[in-house]
Length: 327
Image 1 (cartoon, one colour):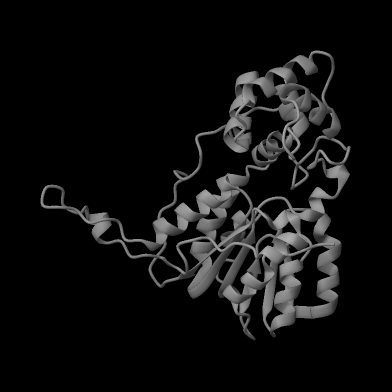
Image 2: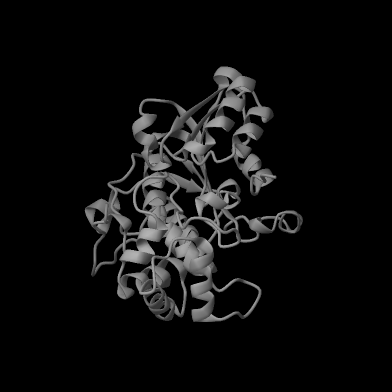
């Protein structure tokens, strides 16, 4: 069963209206999209880089006709594929989908034995490439920064020791190695943070998120809404800092340090609707345990121009594109 996380809260922020155009930037199994189309006579554009969603897009096209269309692309490229369109709202549900987690052959979860893959786009280097090719130092940084794993170096050392005996190719192999390295304590599997870190690294998820936020700022019309649901602190931190930078006028200067010209000219491009993240209800957490870490933030686009973009909000961590990978 697919549960669109925090659906009541997302619908309340969106307030679906006939004739408006919404972008579901992380289509997945189409949970948000279908509920938007049911709620009003609106139009939805679904985006997803995963080719496995195509059968579901055909179902919705058959049901809702021209009110729904799909573009296979990462949401970070929405400003390119939707240039010149009038967009009333953009919804992003960040991270791996339930559909991907539940497919053993995709290699996202240690709960199901399968190939150590983790690629959302099913192209480029895989998680197996990372654990078999990268140095202890690089794996340590990946596990520490993207997984917030305190014993990252020990996990990396055990991986290096294991790959001396043979190539690491499956999820259960890696989960067993990490369990040997870190032991079991508490209710979470010891490989949880390592698997999260590898998935974020392989898919450049934080870079995609930042570029997606910048693209949303570029194409949303004045009054348009940006709604983002994230699932762990790294994602939420980027969303929070991005929206606060875009919505708050920088502090003014003093007689000793005058306001710089660019600060004086700053006009917020978004209006935050709440300074605090919106949390899932207790009932939703009870019904769907995967929603327990979800956080929703949303803002409304002003008519001020956007800003020059850099990636200063991203962590100083390895990026998958930094490496040359074996063929």
